[in-house]
Length: 210
Image 1 (cartoon, rainbow, N blue to C red):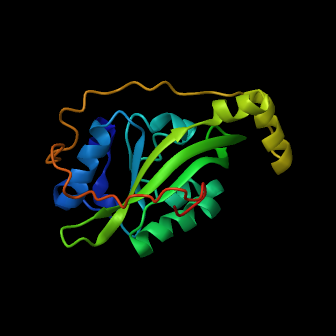
Image 2: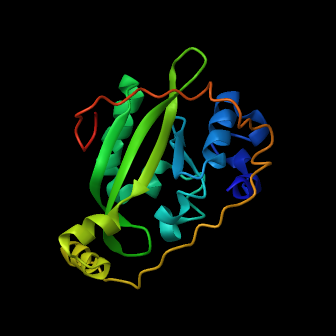
C-alpha cells in the first residue's frame, strides 16, 4: 500500500502533496501500513481514506480507486450505518465497538450479506484534539453464516433478491503483503504519540457506542 500511496498525485487532493502532510498524519499512516491487522484511516473533513494490506480484501473491486477516496463515497451503501458511528467518534472523542454487525455491502459489483467486528477510534493531535478516525476491523461473515447453516452463495443471492439486483460471480483478492520499509517519505513507524484510544467500556452495545 505504501507504493500505491506514493504513486498517486496528492497535489490534486484535499491533502495536498505528501511533503506538506502534517506529522500527525505521517505517524498515523506509518502505524497503519506497518500493521498486519486490517486497519483504515479516515482523515480530515473530506474523510480521505487510507488502508493497509490487511484491509484490502474487504474492498473487493473498489481497490485501488478506494485509496484516497472519500470514505462516505467508497462505502455509500453502508454509510447509513458507518456515518453515525464516525460522527460519534468525531464529536465525542469516544471509541465505538461493533461486534458481528450485519452490513449489506457491494464490493464486487453485487450486493452481499456480510458481518464485521470493528472499532472506530479517535486519532488525536498534540493538544489532544480529535483529528480523525482509525478503523480496526475483522470480517466474521463465514463464521456467522456458518452458525446459521447458510452457504455464502445463498446469503449473497438473498441479499440481491432483497435489493432487486443481479448476482455476479464471487471473487476475493488475495492479501500480498508489501515490503513497506519505506512506506511513505517522512513517515515514522516507531511513534504512537499521535494515536490515542478511548477504551470501550465492558458490556457495551454491539452496534455503535460501547
